[in-house]
Amino acid sequence: MQFIKGRNIPLTLQLIKNDNSYEDEATVTYTIYENDLTTVSVSAQTAAWNTTHYCYYDLLDVSVNWLLQSADNYIVKWSISDAASGFPSVMIDDLCVLTDAASGSLTSTSISEVSDAVWDEIASDHNTELTTGYLLSEIFSRNINSVSTSGSLVKVVDFGDILTGLSTVGYTLYNANSSIYQTRTTTGVYAVSGGCYAVNVSYTNAWQGLILWDTGVTGDTNYAIDEFNSDGTTIRAVNFGDGDAGLSTVGYTLYDENGDERQARTTSGVFNVGGGCYAAVISFENAWKGIILWDTGDGNYAVDEYNVSQEVSLASNINTNVKKVLGLVHSNIYMDQPSYDGNDNLTSLRIRIYSSAASVGTSNNVISTYTVTSVGDGSGKFTSWKQVET
Image 1 (tube, rainbow, N blue to C red):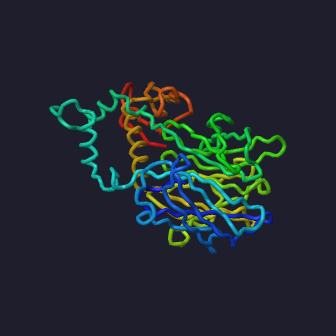
Image 2 (cartoon, rainbow, N blue to C red; image 1 turned 90 degrees about the vertical axis):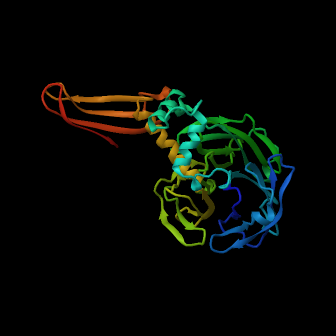
Image 3 (cartoon, one colour; image 1 turned 90 degrees about the horizontal axis):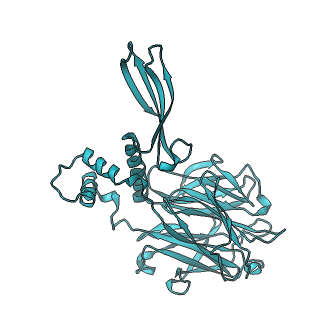
């Protein structure tokens, strides 16, 4: 779960019984710890049952209950009592607080201010005229298109009390298009307590995807799924359990934070990860926060939050557009599929630009594709030349 520093945090927990009904009579509280699992950041808070979305819910007021909040990774410990038998007394989740809007947000920064900031960073002196061409030249010479956004996120999983103390727990990383990013590994996974496990996952290039956990128990493997959004963006996942594995009917409905329906139910883009786990890339052009209500198509539901900030959206768009500009000035570019007329004038051509030099000429890491068309007028001449993004 990822949230913006300084903004109230919606937290949800869903308890599903063996008959796929919902436990709605439990007493649910939560405590937020720093990533050492010892230092308490938010003392015990109560989550109340929400009859609309079938979950326990609390909107954490950070101005009252988290005055010393900082951008970092945290652990949420859910405490459950008075529930039907079969539910653990403790569940663990991860929480990431991203940089707040007051510390450099592009939402309150003009384009001229951004330009001045870039100028201050790259110019050894200020005697050169500040022009777009000069900035692009400096960017190109420094190969900024290959700069990586790297780091790590703590990820946690709760398999319940009966699966405590396992040495076989591992995980697989999937890209947002469902392809495997990293094959299954147990490296770095450690037991926390009570069937809870954790790992610190490193990433590069602001990677986003899925982490599919499994217990590794031969013949009786349990699965859990979580999103991995290092840049605060858009992939979302749900786990309906083995009993709902392999479905083609899973879909979701989006609700605004006030409960109004934002997007009607759809199954478009939902893909099966395995073990009853499903995922979809859910994106908006602008910042949006609200609720994702998943369903199997036959009456089973799950709920999740969606929080993407304006500054994250703008930063992502700027990053992509800068890379496009670099490609158009012939950085990591590949031209193929040429066609010629009877005078050997070029009539069409495909151009692809890439985020990685190692991928040039392949179908990997393509930022954008363009089609060039021209109209010839005798040998070695043309009357028009058009380049269109496709």
